[in-house]
Amino acid sequence: MGIVERFINLFRGNNWLVIPAALLCIVVHEVSHGYAAHLLGDRTAKSMGRLTLNPLPHIDPIGLICMMLFGFGWAKPVPVNPYHFNKRKLGMAIVAFVGPLSNILFAVISLLLLRLNFYLSANLNANYPVFEVLASFFTTLAILNVGLAVFNLIP
Image 1 (tube, rainbow, N blue to C red):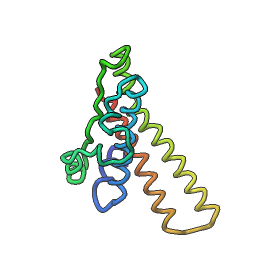
Image 2: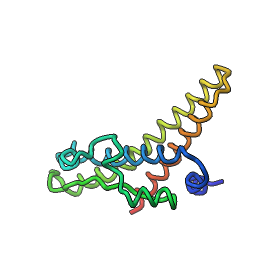
Image 3: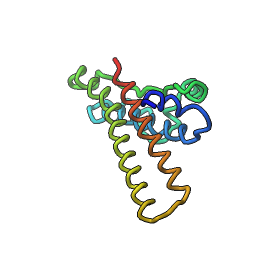
Image 4: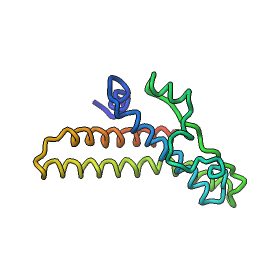
């Protein structure tokens, strides 16, 4: 099964880990955009309360419903005012690139945590269900993050 089929199949069935994993991926992605803009001089996202890991300010109700029904959704985009940047085009390019970059880094961290989970379960000779749930969650996080990064790199 290819990565695309695996990504699509995550949203089918009763895989309850997808919603919290998707919320984490989306929030990290959007906060990264806002934080990059903040570092470049734009305070718009901060003034609107969008530099938070709380998922509520980032949720678009229609996007969330579509995600649950169709397996494809969206979040509220972080507001950015390029007129606050010294170099507008470069600033916008950096802000746009930081979102997918954060997802790639989050995928790498997820895979490292997955590896740690396998190491601990093997060395503890433990067959606890928590290791299986964590393995599934970290795998889901990695797949969703890579999918979100690739999707956001499409012009």
